Image (cartoon, rainbow, N blue to C red; front, side, top):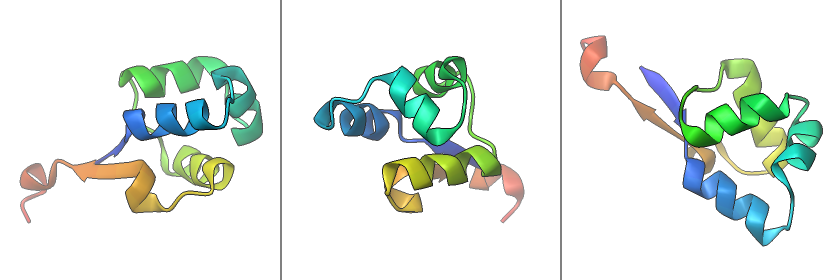
Length: 75
């Protein structure tokens, strides 16, 4: 199971609120470089980072993340 950021949702969220990636990273308590990696899709957020992103956006889990890789989990 892999939890992926819904990148477009986050980018649109920031754009609607006129929040820069750097300002958002500070609000979420993570590095701006990590935010860039999440938005590019080169990294997936850890549980701790997911919680920080949820708190910083005020969104719910299903709105900000998607779960993939169930077929690999043998379920």
